[in-house]
Amino acid sequence: MGKWDANKKLKRDSLLNTSLELFTSQGINQTSISDIVKKAGVAKGTFYLYFKDKYDIRNRLIARKANQLFTSAYLAIQKEHLSSAEDKMIFMMRHILLELQDDSKLLAFMYKDLSWGLFKEAVTDFSDDEDGDFLAIIETMFEDSPVKYRDHEVMLFLIVEMVSSSGYSSIVYEQPMDLEHLLPQMELAVRGIMKAYELH
Image (cartoon, rainbow, N blue to C red; front, side, top):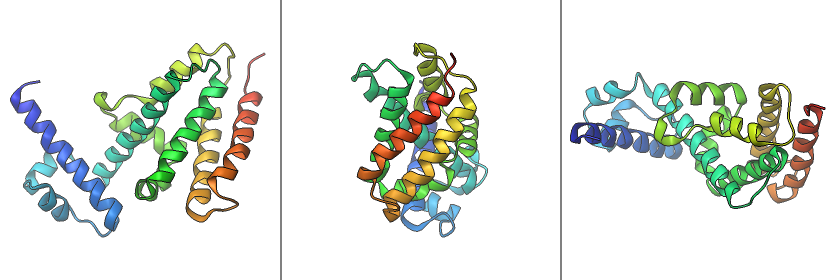
C-alpha cells in the first residue's frame, strides 16, 4: 500500500471510528456530519470523498461490525474443532450474543439492523476486504458440513430474526429472562429450525 493509499485509509478509518463513538454515545439523530468531522480532525469535504451522508457511514459501520462479530466467532470456532454446521451455528450464536452483552453501546447501535435482510444488504453493499466476509464464512460452514440443508437463506433468515430479537430483549430488558437462562432455550430453537431444513 502506497503512502497516499495509507493516508486515505487512515482518514476513512478515523471517520468510521469517530462516527461509531458519536453514534453510540449520543445517537445518530443527535450527531451531525459537522460533529463527526470536527472530532475526527478532517475537513467536511473529506467526509464526502468517502460517504454520501451519515446514514451511509452508519451502514458501513453496521457492515464492518457485523463482519467483525461473525469473523471473531468463526475464528473462535476453529479452536473448538466442531464438525457439524448445527454445532457451529450454536457456537456462533452464543459467541456473538455474549460479545453484544459485553458491549451494550454497540448492541444499542446495531439492534434495529440485526435483521437478516438489512444485515445481508449492509454487508453485501458495504463490506471491505479487510473486514472479512461473513456470507462467505457461513457458506463455507455449510459446504464443510456432513449434513446438508435446503434453502440456506430462508433458514438463516429465521435463525437471525429469532436470535436477534429475543437476544436483544433478553440482554436489554431481561425478558422473558436473562441471557444466561435464555441461551439454552435459544439453542433448542436453533437446533429445531436447522433440523427442519435438513436434507434427507
